[in-house]
Amino acid sequence: MLKEFLEKLLELKRPEIVTVKDRDYSTINLEPVYEPNFNGLEIFNLENLITYIKDDPDNLKEKHKLINIVSPTKILLQSSIYGDFKQRDTYMIVDCKDILPDIYFERFMSIEQFIITLKSKFVMTEELEQIVRIVGNISDETVTNYNDDGITQQVTAKTGIARVGEVALPPRIELKPYRTFTEIEQPSSEFLLRATKRNGEIEFALFEADGGAWKNESIKNVAEYLKNKLEGVSNLTILN
Image: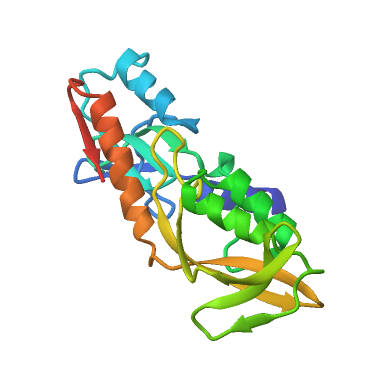
């Protein structure tokens, strides 16, 4: 008796396919039965995306394709919609987030950590070199004064051989962190450079001050790069 009851329960839960207005549904929650979709490749750079589109190893030349630039670090190569349920396949996912350096803004760090961060995670520019020189000439032993009027900060630093003087930190600086695909020029952003003194040591931090405008610039740069590299390729739309 118990066995028959369990078999009946299993039979009730077993899904069946029913057709409603020429569309197939499952009897459990009426889940639609989609057409088989495309398993997208996952890569991390733009060059492989360009190679895939040009070489066309999966014979997609006759299909219309969309390059959807989702963010400064993520791009989707997708199909046009098809089928009764208006599906869209994703042929390729290009995501460089995992290979970009972790940059911690709004976090104070020691002079040594701050300099290492600037030299290893930012594009070297004249303004960055200037900041490295200023910060590099500050040591906890030479700091006797630390002034902050809310706009400009001053610390005591070496200004020459065996010479110590007041140095004003620029309140706003323009830098280029590595935040998008390395094939394109990194967008510049304004940052607030701030110093603080904790436990007798000077620490520095950068605060973003462009309202996220760099993201729009990055997406625009990625789109322009791909348009130039894929010029002449048919059945392709680049969205940004």
